[in-house]
Image 1: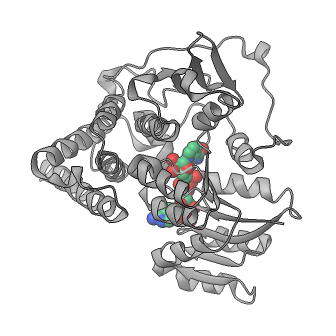
Image 2: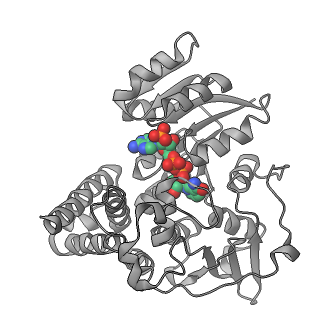
Image 3: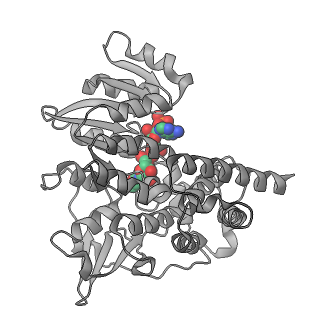
Length: 390
Ligand code: NDP
């Protein structure tokens, strides 16, 4: 039996992972399932899969979790320390699918026990790429990409030498506002931004797709995971979301990865790697699809892409600052305190303020320094937002 744990089990990626492992109940022994506030789902899955431990990230949800698990023999726990303890429980394969920077510390702990970490949580590499990769190396742990673009690149690179890679192209659907007049973006609502043209995902990542903050994180993730230079990474808007990524080689060949927009492909690839096993995903009918379109993204529409390039050039703790500012700006947009384009303005302002006022951006890349910059970046976004409002 293969021991597996799922962090962020109640979310979109977590539920797709559970869908796959519950199809082969005799293959997997579930160690830990973690969630946030969706206690009903967390307890139901923990019981169905016979997990050893079930953890909610939030202390105020512990009583509900205990009640929901009463009589099952499953240990219930809550809070950050409990998440770290769950990540240290011996497992062969751990899914990192918590949303946001909260996924970083459990991911690092999972690597410390030498597990294979299936990384959906892109923030882990954005906030602390070199630290995470060093930890994996030191503990002989493996990091497998789950983001569909990175899984696609990883698959296109099988058997290839990184030295022959010229460029990596990741695609973006363009999100909910791809065809909107620029002048109307300021009036975009949360509901409109939460409506993805092709993928069915959690609300936060869907809004991040509309702003391309999600793609911006993925560009940084590409640089960290594959160790390429920023100028080797390109983004193309591809409305059909069929080609997930392409790798260009020194002989001019382009290897593309195509698939239906279903995260169970990338999750399943990471679950079964290095084998390819049957997956319950629909097969592409290219003739029916008819055409595949590609365009260069307009950085006036998607300023997050420009900010990602600045972050990659800047290095240090700028990835952690960028991500934290983005997460907080997104909270304010969802809570309807700022307009859609204000998110990028707020992130740019916080990055500039770190340059001007605080040497922390060049501090060593440690978990403590990531936490400190993360905290300050969120505070500064709040100050910007409340100053404007007041
Ligand atoms: P969801 O919002 O659907 O799920 C997030 C999960 O994290 C839930 O289990 C949630 O618990 C839990 N959670 C929320 N806040 C915290 C916290 N502070 N501490 C610990 N756990 C928390 O997200 P997705 O599944 O969409 O995305 C997960 C990660 O995967 C993200 O990093 C995203 O960028 C990445 N990703 C997602 C893709 C997708 O298709 N959805 C594609 C590629 C990457 P609860 O719901 O119980 O409150």
